[in-house]
Length: 140
Ligand code: UDP
Ligand code: MG
Image (cartoon, rainbow, N blue to C red; front, side, top):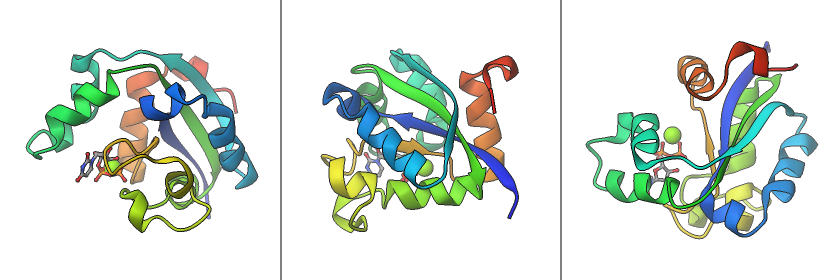
C-alpha cells in the first residue's frame, strides 16, 4: 500500500477538554505521522464551506455552529494507507457504534460532537489538505 496523506481535525468538544495530546498519541501509536498541525478558530462561514457536501443534511446548521464554537486543531497525517488507517483509529461516526479503543469510543460526546474529522477518500483528502495548508507547511 502506498504512502498517503489525510486531513484530520480535532474538533471543539475535544480541544475544550484538553484532549489534543491523548488523541495525537493514538494517531502516532497507529503509525501515522503528524506532518503538519495548527490550532485555529473557524468562523461559521469557514466551517460551512468545509462541510459544504453536507449542506442539504438536516444537521448541517448545527454542525457548522459546533465547528465554529471553539478552537480546532487541523493536521495532516501521513503513513501507509493513512486515509483508511485514520478512519480506523477514529471509529464510527456515532460513538455508540465505535469499536473499543477508538478515539470516538473513548472521547466522543455524541454523534455530532464526536471529537475528530478524517478525510474519506484520496480526492477529498487532497482538497481538504489544500483548504487548510500551503505546500510549504507540510513537512514529511
Ligand atoms: N453528523 C451529525 N449527525 C449525523 C451525522 C453526522 O451531527 O447524523 C456530524 C458529525 O459531526 C460527523 C459530521 O457531521 O462527524 C460529518 O458526517 P459524516 O457522515 O461525514 O461522518 P464522518 O465522516 O465524520 O464519520
Ligand atoms: Mg465524512
